[in-house]
Length: 398
Ligand code: HEM
Image (cartoon, rainbow, N blue to C red; front, side):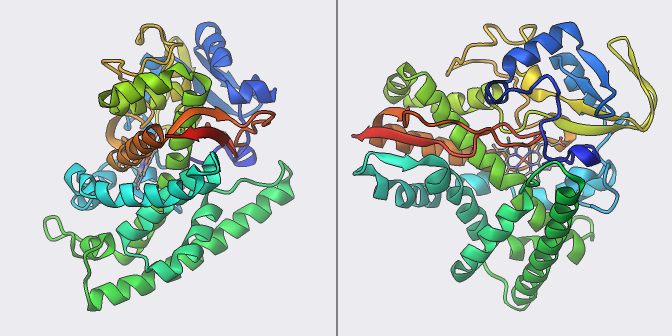
């Protein structure tokens, strides 16, 4: 979801991760980088990379030194610093409380059942296309109050927001940027129209709630509200798709886990946390140094890009015992899969809930889950995202 340095947007940024096998399992490379060059400047990409837990945490918890405001045109909370960030976040927090999210559980269960049931008899499904992609899009559309008849249009816009370039040429990059701009403009027009309707006739949905949200007489401007709706799609959909897919990938790669979790459904919530540590959907988070600063003996100059590798920090043996093992009831689990500090993922309660419902449903309805044999996994070609494009599974129905 963050933007990589211009030319490398959407491409695997570390030259060390060349082979597809490494992109599908980058953690060995992270381990080497963590011990050999924990904080290093990459001349090729013109940015710093930070690999150890302690250093990543330091970067993320110091917004005064490491700014999120890399793209001045964008005023969403993800790319603003205090005090503006707090003002935006406090306003939307009113609508995004854990309790409000928990109330969505029955509806999320219904959607999961609707998407899973048609495939049970065949004993096969394309996890990404049939379940992990549509589920979060439907949930967010309903939450915002997008009418059912606009669902397909909404999904297309949502997909286009996170699409990568077709190759790494300058033309492809330009084309992609123009397409994204067009897409964002269409979405903005669409959200403005819904907002106009809700202003006249408020409904029981997030857009109506946000239109009314107020702190000390301050409200979100129309531009901020539109920006926030677009941010929810960009930050929430593909990430949740990858969390669901990565969780099922772990079940298929470690089949004994399936029965263990079926016998201990009380470990499903911690298994979701462990997935966020072990196969995090976001592996890297970008910042801009605001001052010249020392980090683990290296001097980062003001104005330089800093990439914090949470995918590596999450495997740091200084913090996690048996860091390379998936332990479904790991406690404590201080992973940074949702980031850390003031920008900690606003949608975490929603993403957790969706993943829990899906895992529980899958384990109740399927056994012997495996990747369809001969499938060649393809990594998503993105600098910051860890996931696969397709994950066809086969199973026996229960
Ligand atoms: C921020 C990950 C799902 C909305 C973040 C950040 C991470 C993250 C790492 C911090 C970025 C930074 O520090 O620059 C994830 C993952 C998800 C997920 C792994 C799914 C598994 C969602 C969902 C929503 C959402 C479902 C909303 C519906 C946001 C927003 C922010 C954010 C609005 C910005 C918060 C701020 O700047 O204060 N997310 N996210 N995310 N996420 Fe998520």
